[in-house]
Length: 138
Image 1 (cartoon, rainbow, N blue to C red):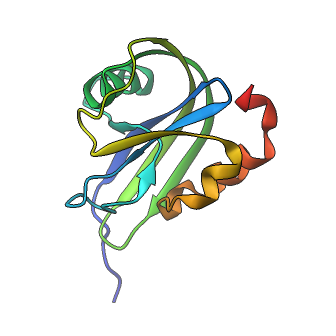
Image 2: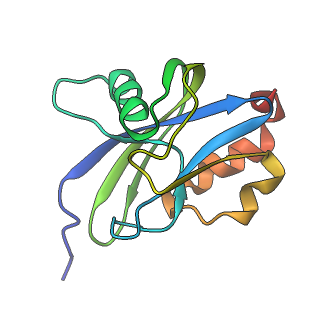
């Protein structure tokens, strides 16, 4: 008997670097994978590009404006209750200091601090790339 994880949820997530640190956010406790840390972003709306989604989500979630620089990874991961298709983009921070508007908490972390935070399983490959790509942190 196979279980159907339901429709694929498309998500855009941003790698926002500044001064050798990366911006991460904590998922709300009541959300799917609640309490884990993630790269800020969110669900793509119908008719919206992944880049448009990411800019909108970062404005709504953190109050910041970014430009997307490049797509760095695309991952489809199935959890028991849903499947997510994630597209990760390196972003250039443009303006506004982040504020925890649509998330309970955010942090600016260094590469060596990544292991101190629990991330969803879908982020594992990207976390490995982040540790192995020091030029992204400059």
